[in-house]
Length: 126
Image 1 (cartoon, rainbow, N blue to C red):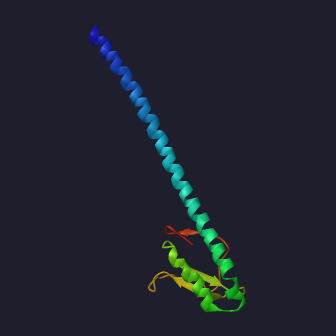
Image 2 (tube, rainbow, N blue to C red):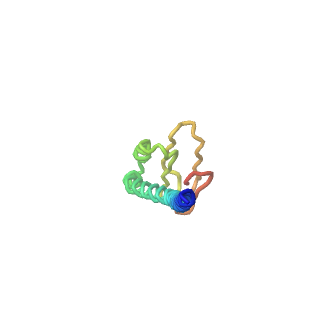
Image 3 (cartoon, rainbow, N blue to C red):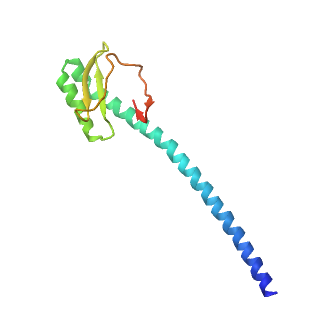
């Protein structure tokens, strides 16, 4: 009789343990998926804010047609290692100043800017 109670107790414990582990795995999976989707949104929001700040800081360079000031402003992006290249275009749409993290970086800037938006190509935000 003692063996049957012990077996029933073990079965109940195993059932509770299985239920708890399953709930934790499901909750953990949902949290990981949520974090991954929020991570991309946070990166896009951060880079958009950085671009707006760079735009405000570069207004005097554009007003006085000072490309060296524009390039100096862009050089501040060295503090952000995830930014590989950047460019400033003047109001007429021509390339004004550029920044490349490495001189050998293969960043190509279009002669005229595209639409005022972002896109993700090859795991890079452009």
